[in-house]
Image (cartoon, rainbow, N blue to C red; front, side, top):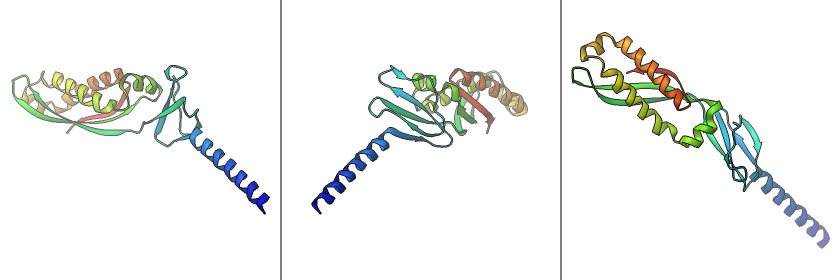
Length: 171
């Protein structure tokens, strides 16, 4: 009986160690997410993007950084001056997502909170530069033209920060 209990405890201990090791070596990237790998031995962020699924890692040496790549909406409010020096309140609704192939550079240069830092900044910059070229009356009568210029400029600026802007609209 003592032999059986000894064997059982040995098997249980081995199974516990194996389960713990397998659990710390595996990570899952869910749908709508991608991961970049931080590797301490190879000098930081590895250049590849890791797709959805379950993957292996070396526990102390590697750490996956999981990033959401789904399209998200963001509203950017701005108080902007027009050409005739009137102040207008404009809200810009942006549907955006990161460029998947550029996630390692995006994380290395801007971190995981890139959307909190980049979108309000470039949104205000583009809004102020475009709206300053129109009178307050023109903003109402040429709304489509103003919206198209803002969209074109914002898409161009978003590409510099590895962001794809699917839709930009004045609300």
